[in-house]
Length: 400
Ligand SMILES: Cc1cc2nc3c(=O)[nH]c(=O)nc-3n(C[C@H](O)[C@H](O)[C@H](O)COP(=O)(O)OP(=O)(O)OC[C@H]3O[C@@H](n4cnc5c(N)ncnc54)[C@H](O)[C@@H]3O)c2cc1C
Image 1 (cartoon, rainbow, N blue to C red):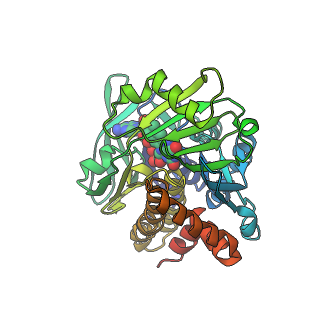
Image 2 (spheres, rainbow, N blue to C red):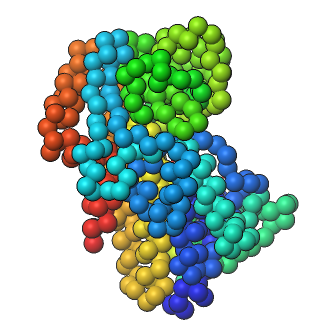
Image 3 (tube, protein in one colour):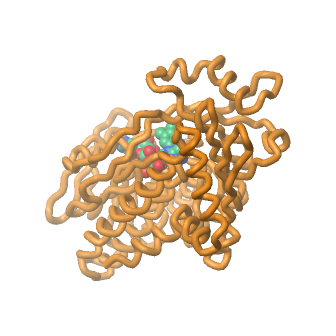
């Protein structure tokens, strides 16, 4: 190895995970290029939850203060039966001795994209090549070759390492023939953004709310700028039906009749999968974020797991560039693939199924179980350590 300064990394995809990996590696001294097919930083809200370990990691890059400023901490979250008001409230105060961030930060994903993208542009202008779509990738013993198209020209980039941060439909994962086993959940997810004072109208709301209801489960998250209300449309509904203003307003009126149509700032449908790539490292190429794993949004783990990948991989590459053993790269897969399956999939799947329980008697039973957890300080703490991914980061970081 030549040492970090002489080593180059190409990152395919300038979403949140690619940009965080780029900033971490640039600061570690690597020569980094990000290829991003969009022509500017993404402004899509998408994920809105940052958990404690993610905020601690992002603080190492100086990004957390801005997210705290632009987001809204939710020190509590709850499950509630909408019709009766019976509920259970989880309170991050019980883990306040373990993290400087005892809350879920509700903050749109594009704010991290902006913070990381702007830091890169300040410190290393031109690192992100916008409008550059990678079309193929190959490797040999000495490096990686990526072909990409930018302003109608086909270009070639040669580098020591490559990171796929190119999202769920990853070109890199497909080109390498890496399997992506798993399942697609039958229900799609639908989210609307509304700036209505729900917290004044519905007195028992906290920052993050999961409701069971006779008209179907729904969730309500409070970011700094709006409420994000989510639900799953009935099976078989087309995207057009789901997005129709009449259908959306009727559902919102059941949640809270405001007396006038709600003004929507955002409405998105997306498919929900539970998948994991067979490996996250192949020679000199690594998969991260949605390119490596997908999960249900229940619990807000997708983006967080991806950011954890970026830090684990940046640390491993840095050690290898400094002369450490190549096995650290395989360890990246061992740690992060395990976190995706044993922590993120396990917890998000349990959350997803619990929230979608249709039988009112079973729902009440689930509520009683959760209330028993919340009433026992040790179990309450353990539950929040799982649901904040603190246990995940600790456990996976200790794997050999
Ligand atoms: C509509 C929607 C809503 C979501 N809402 C939630 C939510 O509420 N909660 C939650 O936890 N998660 C949510 N997610 C998931 C969450 O957004 C992802 O986990 C997160 O974006 C993963 O980040 P990433 O950087 O790995 O991938 P992405 O954010 O998908 O970024 C991939 C980047 O790669 C670029 N790219 C792709 N192919 C190429 C190529 N060939 N060449 C160059 N560039 C390329 C793309 O333009 C993009 O910028 C949502 C996802 C979607 C699609």
